[in-house]
Image (cartoon, rainbow, N blue to C red; front, side, top):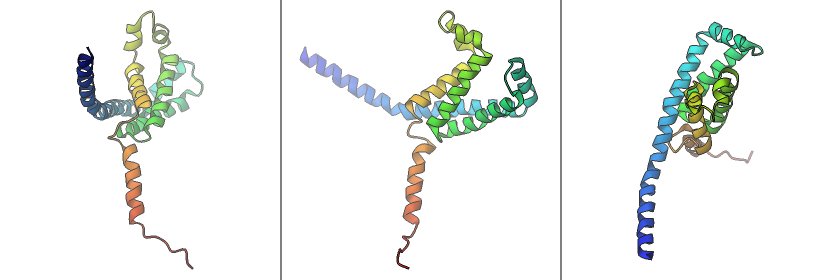
Length: 168
């Protein structure tokens, strides 16, 4: 029995060792695909601010014109940063709050039906964006991102700088 357990454990470790190599490419795919979608959504809102303002007014949001501009910029710039993996967790946190508020303010019926009618909840517009931002918020951006490149770029730049003499 012990030999069987050891063999199954070896197969398990081997298989999931291979699977773990897919983590960073998967996170890259999630970031690029949903970052691109967010960028497009923000771009569309920026070019149709009057319609977005009208929609926010219908939701009785305070300062609808300013909120329309703010949300459009969050989606536009957040989508770019999200796709690049720059400031990943902060960007994901801002996007998560934004998308949660989209549920609360614009899709309240879908939000309250999360347990009674999950299909309505998952079919709502913010769902996929929210899941993608939560994945990156919880797991990070992966190894293929700007966040991982910045320390290396700083080290290279520091190595190229000549040391300054403190003797005057």
